[in-house]
Length: 136
Image (cartoon, rainbow, N blue to C red; front, top):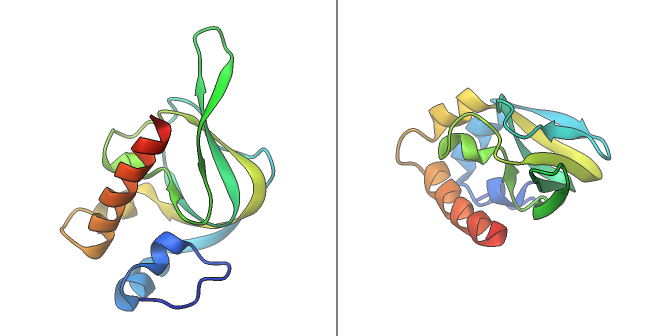
């Protein structure tokens, strides 16, 4: 496992070093601004973001247009991981509530990497279960 945790995504840090290094080669660092919308509700998810700093909020938009925050993701997680489980559209609007940074990966690349039994796939399955509990 990787040992450098400061300014790193803690989910990725749990991977074996060889898996981590391969995945990072398929990502690019990005700056994420305060109030930046990563995904609109029901919009296609083209990229996933492994946050390294900052916080994103998952917001459910109600029928009357009001919104409620249902989850928060920081450097312990990933946003957009639902492309592995529930299709290509965002089930929530995702907004940066605290400016930060992250590693952006093409959604297709994540699907490809997680298509076989691997440490990444197992980690994302556990993360999805925890995320689902938080949203519930």
